[in-house]
Length: 562
Ligand code: NAP
Image 1 (cartoon, rainbow, N blue to C red):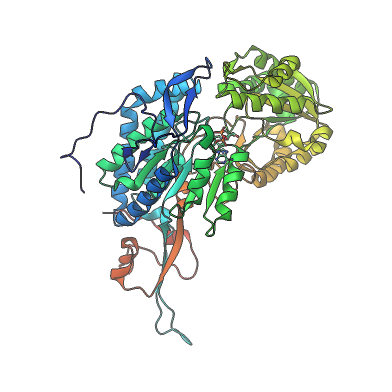
Image 2: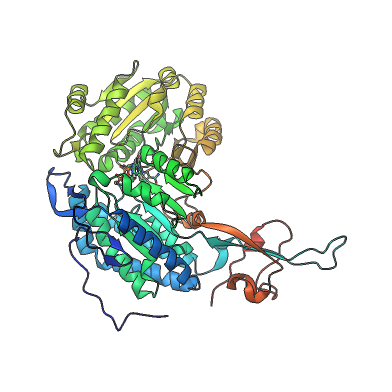
């Protein structure tokens, strides 16, 4: 494998330069480029570096380089890609001392949380490296030819997944590492054999640039063409423009998005309106409903309340899996549980939101909820909410305390605005009249990443019915636990029906995320020499099982690459 040992690069930077990185090189900004700064949400102060938004020229260069790199590196093996992923992980870990402090300044998130998120980012890269070292994920299917079949000979068919080409990646504000520059979308696309162009998030541009530097170094070390990875800043007057231009670019063949419903919907529209529409995978907002069944709330009203309070309030509720709707059946234990939840949240400290504009949106959605007839406040200050909403978005410190509201089943069933995500530390408790009412509410919750059920032994019938409903409405059903704290493994599903995502058929996290960046292709009666290596020697006994007509587990028996 080619290396760059003869051409040593400078030591990793400790601070961002403020410029995009195109095909491995920091670009010189065009004169008069739009600039913007990152804001420290704990102080409201602008951080020193000025960032230059990518120009159309930068974007064209990145997309064209990615296209050329895709074709130039098509013969690189899965082992080469696995090595690249491991090198990215190693370089990111090596730069943690620069990345984490910068990220703390840009997001207000605490050090331990960001250290854990960095660990999750690198372990996800390593997981994908392990996965692509054998062909299991490629859904290979082989129909051997039957030349003597009557009345017509049967052709030989071999099917495999192939990469789509350059992928555009949009990270989110609230996971500046695990769902951003080298996060799950970028890692899975690189693993699948697709070059990546990241559109940096304007709320953590310096973090993104430092991580991009680590990725570019690893791409180079692994012997891939430099166009395999680029990073484009966007902000100021070019905030939405860079993203839309990227999704429209003819060399971009797919895109992955993590963020708000509005952003996901806007960019999905751009992808669909191209002359050649491309796959667009948007992971958006989620209400993560929690159902606390009667037997369970009788048993431990306070314990469940404590558990939930932490899940709602941690990191100011800015998690895609934050529980926003809590359903209980009315009764004495339910009152105890709600009262305790309110108390726990009242005692939770105010924590910084990621940005003034996110705080503003949060407050206006809470205001909309408290203005809904039939909604009451359990804990939180309505007057403070109203006066904060009335103030213009500014760069004041953005600390917020949690907010808990309650309403009834009837109001919830009627008022559709209560079904929407409130991104931040707010939740609405819905009191149902009985088990039937709870099932009616479950049938109406929006498509969501998760749904949780707290149950005891006496709740099994209701839990069974609820599980059936939730399996149609959410990507992950959690029993006796809170939805925050996603475990990344082979069986992880981080997805769900619209509006949690626009693609309920897949997951953004875990090995199955790879398939998003590929499409199937079948080779009919192909000479062995012309087949992709993984399909070539399948006639030899013991390498592949043969499947006639349909895909079964047998047809995707793992085979190690040499
Ligand atoms: P966001 O404001 O939508 O930003 C996400 C990305 O989209 C940014 O790069 C942003 O860049 C771009 N963007 C937004 N609107 C756009 C538009 N109209 N046209 C073009 N580009 C656009 O979202 P966020 O504040 O970062 O994230 C918070 C949301 O993400 C919450 O709703 C949360 O639930 C969700 N989230 C979901 C998951 C999941 O896995 N499902 C994970 C984390 C977060 P520009 O500003 O430069 O345009």
